Length: 407
Ligand code: NDP
Image (tube, rainbow, N blue to C red; front, side, top):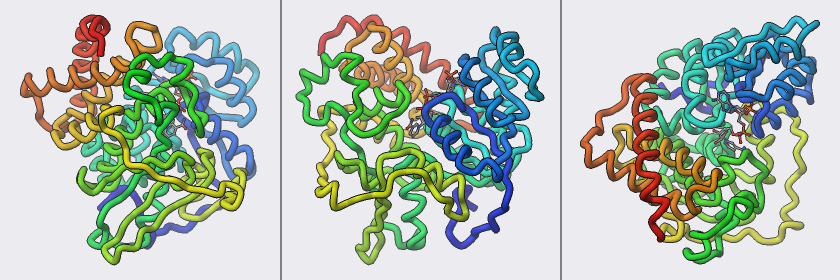
């Protein structure tokens, strides 16, 4: 049984809901809290978490009367307790407190920690059979098979929160699995869509952070500029919906209005459209199996006028090619792809490598991994975390030579 629910197993929507937001102080967290604000009577906040942003977390915990608040940084427990003095919110700190937040009894959990650090907390929510709105794509990229199997076993309901996957989730219910030909994930193309390879190579941090359509966290914005994000999403789609790499296509669509499409055997293509506003897919997850009233702007296609499409360029954006390579090889290579990319993006932000070197570092790390012959399937979270750890170390060791190499 798939952990992503189908249209015909709709459960009755309950009036009140307890919710937990992992990564409440981030960009997805912010959109989620905004939706919760829209119906305070319906949602009781169980737990909220952050990495180190005590001030932002305490402010939200006070506003929503959260029962539990946790920061991942263990040195910040005192500051969090101080910031929440006089409230009934319990406080926690360290990785175990983030896992505890996820394990506490909330009906619905938003998994929006950034990076592989979100895997164990998301699994804690999955294991108790919660409805998990999954924004944290690294959970699937690092441990996809295992994550989805565990969700199915626990009876957890995985609600795809990433806009493209949420679009596919909505469109897939128009047909059956054996009628599906392919899914199409759209990509804005990012700020470097029309740039030459030479210009992309030299792009600055400020240029990479200027996304044309979406307002998002720093890491994902850089991944959008390199199209690594689209690669992560191809991998994410494969695990979420049990699709082969050949069943997933990417289409560049600069307006970001169509988020995903599904082609069926009769050649019907079903698409989901909406303004580029993450509150739309999150609202779909929050309301599931019903629809709630969302605060986002209505789509005015007459005003937009034109929707355009281009094939992706795998030469100028090698990260996308590498994602397909990793998916085809399987056996932990998608974990390596993600880990090396996280190291590369951090190095780019720190000014240690050029923008163009991000993909080179990922490729060098993947090649090294394949040469080592270590491609056994991952069977536990610890396996995934160990591959993630080793791949980070390998990427860090390759960093100096990549930094020196010109394109
Ligand atoms: P942000 O960087 O804006 O926020 C990340 C959140 O996770 C913050 O609350 C941060 O806390 C917390 N956090 C960071 N590191 C840790 C850690 N080690 N342990 C516990 N908590 C941690 O990210 P986004 O909201 O942009 O993205 C979150 C996830 O959602 C990512 O996986 C991203 O790929 C995915 N996503 C994001 C989209 C978007 O539009 N932003 C769209 C689709 C998917 P603090 O504030 O204290 O640092």
